[in-house]
Length: 222
Image: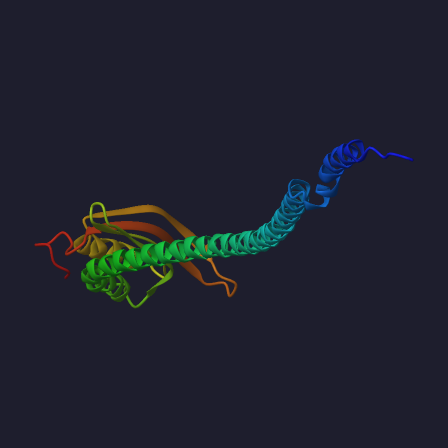
């Protein structure tokens, strides 16, 4: 008769079950699964950050290029404005010079006008002196050359002339008449000449000076 020890067999089964239970429960572990998910999510976040950084860098680069183009345009406009400003300043200086020249010309004209107005009062005695000297020449005499000047500093009228006469008495008469009309009379030379037709005549050079408003007699022309 064979006897089987079932008690040992049962103990062996219990030990085997204890050894197998941990192994059977391994598929239920959650820690490794959670770690893999964390790594996945972290990788995704890192890639998202890299992508966002790239996009932000691209936008910054685009803005930088745009700003650089705007700066270049502004610099070009600045150069153009500087050139225009330079031309404007040159034109302004030219206009100012023209204005200054015109003002100087106006001043000169005003001065000339004042001088002419001042000299206007001298015209009558100057012309009267010429007429009185010419009319005083005797009928047998004539004036071949005549030069009359006005000295505004004295004031006085100075005359240089050449008198020619067929008779010496004509020269003597005219010298006396000229002395009545003038303050100073000088006869520098008297020459006897013969013209191309064989006629004799006398030529005298005379100088005279008179005050502006008269001769020797009471300051008036005779």
